[in-house]
Image (cartoon, rainbow, N blue to C red; front, side):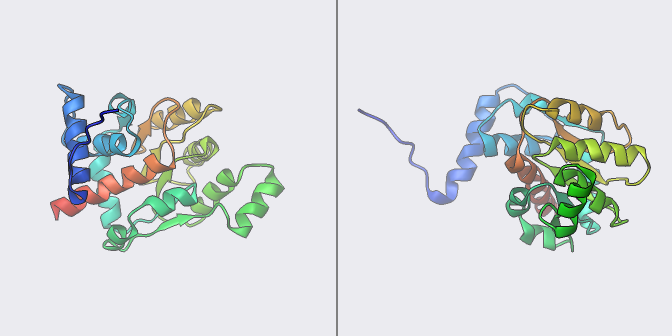
Length: 213
C-alpha cells in the first residue's frame, strides 16, 4: 500500500484545512459576514451541506456580536455545547455560558410538568429576566418552548442559534424559529446539526470579533 501523506506542520493544520475547504467550495459565494461561520461549521463537521443549510436572519452576525460585547450570557441545552465554547474569548466581554439541564430545580420542574429538561431549562432562562443568547444543539423541545415563550412575550432573545440534530420534530422546530421574523437567528435547516455545531458557531463569532479588535 502506497499512501502519500500531506506534509503539514502541526501549527499549520487548521490553516491548511480552511484552504482545502475554500478550494472545495469552488465558485460558491457567501457574504463576508456569514462566510467565516459557514466555513467553521464545515471545518468542525467535514460536511459541506452547511454551505447551503445554514440560514441567517438579517444582520444576525452584527446583532449577535453586539450582544456578546454587552456581556449578554449564553444559555445552552447541553454540557457539550458549554464545554466547546471558547470561554477565554467570551470572558473578554464579561459574558459566560450556562447550561441548566442538570440543575435540581429544572429536573424537578420537568417531572412535575411532564416535560423534558430542555423545556424546563428554557423556562428557567426566561425567569432570569435578562437578555440572553441561546445556543441549542440537541433538543428540538427547547426550540419549541422558546418559540412559545417568545409568542407569549415572556422572553426576547438577542439571538437564537438553532442547530439541533435528529429526526423527531427537529425540522419542524427549526422552522418555528425561522418564522420569528423579529428574532435574530442562525438556523441549520433540516436534520443536521449538533452540539459541536452550536459551539463552533459561537466560536466563529468570537474569532471574528478577535480579528476585528
